[in-house]
Image (tube, rainbow, N blue to C red; front, side, top):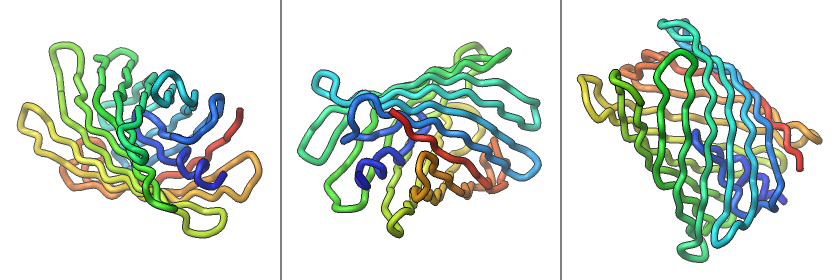
Length: 222
């Protein structure tokens, strides 16, 4: 059960990778993020694990968020999925994608390859490499890579670390990086609160160099 809970905590922007989860397990996540005075985001996201479907493990997400930046506030709806197939006994690999609907603005399609590695006793690892394509004339395409490592700290607490690299395909913007730490407590029945921070490089166009403070909680159900 602890290993299963840890795998459920390995959350990528596009998908969640509970590679041993029983079909029909779900999480609702509520999260608030703030980066200085330039960026705020509040969202709810449904993570669903459908277990073994064919030769792979199917997981889906549905996110609704409101994001406020210097350009104003936007409403976003992001459905996504991952389908991980066994390559070896400890490595799963497969497609992951999401669609970004942004009210009143250009939408985006984000697709790539995701993986999960389960060869360590207590440490779980997942990641993705994807291409983010902005629809419309004013495109801002980029190649994104994520590496997530999660491990238990105490009996009822976990630490997830995420390293993200963004590489714009065109334009004058250079690459930027984000490093996120998330501490989650699972000792409460029916709710798992967490606190986190995102450390970003100065040329991050979202936070404009401001690091993020994140607070939220998961509600697991089946």
